[in-house]
Image (cartoon, rainbow, N blue to C red; front, side, top):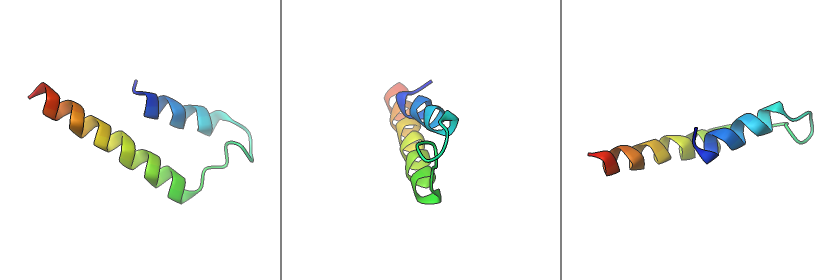
Length: 45
């Protein structure tokens, strides 16, 4: 599991307000996880 995915799971597990993820933050973290996968795929090709 990537560091970004782990941090997202950790944030989701925390009680509010620390774990209160806004839609904007969720989209930003998801975009970083996707970008991380794209970079890894290009490196493997």
